[in-house]
Length: 138
Image (tube, rainbow, N blue to C red; front, side, top):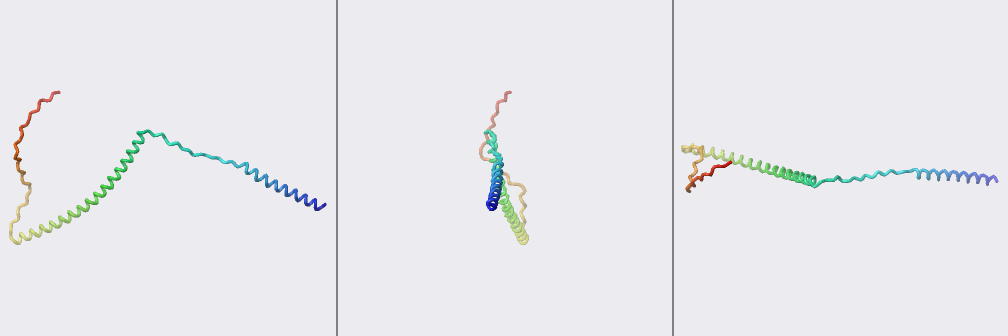
């Protein structure tokens, strides 16, 4: 009998433990709640004029960028042209000095530099008489 009593106590203890485990897991599962917060946005209403203004601003930004790139290229080209012109000026100065030395050695007179442009020839056609305009009435 004693073994039956021990087995009965053991079975009752196992039943109590199993019930405790079952209640503890089932209670936690039923208490869990989830809060869902959807984030739905509605785009703003835009008029045709607002869309046209935005398109114009984008177009002008692109135009300004294009102009900036072109002006940068022109600036680089102008630097090359100025460098070449300075080189030509230096060569002309050396050539002028050589010619002045040759003229001095030969004893020739140097021509006077032209300060003014020569006058333009007069046109060959006859001028038309001026027409008089009627007086303006107010």
